[in-house]
Image: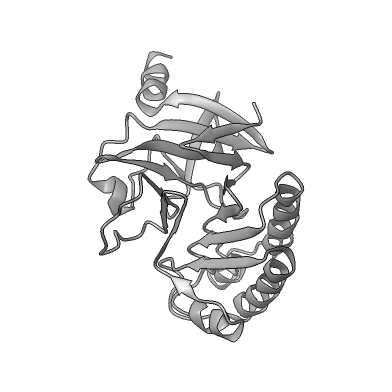
Length: 242
């Protein structure tokens, strides 16, 4: 299938649309330079691919506003030349395409505020849209959450699909409950890594650490196709029986 709505949020590849708002998370601009500095020599291809994918998403939606739900850049304690250049170019692109830009702070965004301020933008800890509470997910904000649904990033969820000896990851959305609230976990909007396999890797968000996510439903995404895998516990049970 290529059209699915979870808790009234429409999945469009790695993005969600709620009303006029498009939501993306975890771009990690500058990731290649960080890997290069560690001796991992990969080309700097991600920015171009992010722009191409976002343009394709825009061709499929009527959203006029955008929310970047944290980790716009990659480095924790500094801002690199690659990040500075790509951040400026990316915000210019967003300004050309959208009438409103909301930046939500992630744990990698210590220096994003300088670029935001230069471009007359604010960086928020959380934002509310149509009964949805949107926050990055690296911490639980110290505020009363009145909205019915929470949307987080930070986890970079993916699903490991095994064929023989080969393991291939696909990005996925997770849908579940956090106490009395609905919760959606978004995949990353970057192309250097597919993310963390929900079948084998522990949750890192405080929203999920205290929970068993076995009842969460999994929606895989692959080139604008949406693949519904059912509940995580049923996927695990199927794997064990094979």
